[in-house]
Length: 66
Image (cartoon, rainbow, N blue to C red; front, side, top):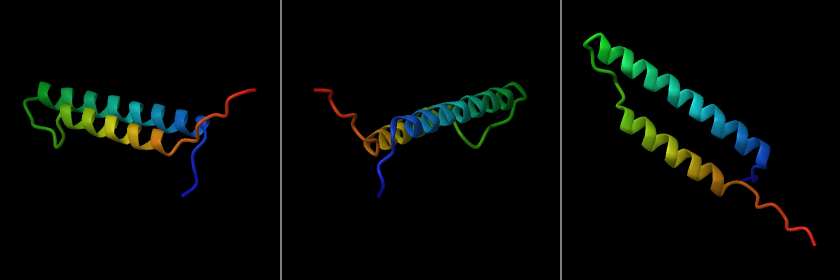
């Protein structure tokens, strides 16, 4: 599999964090209306953390300047 570069890491990480924030807002809204959401905030946090860690492992390590 092709390694990701730093810009791709940035895009994926920020996009994932934006989605996580939207889910958390949706969860809070559902709780305020007395309903249960399909996800819990802890699940969103865990999924986000694990995905970011996996993406970081796929990212090329920058070369050191001589």
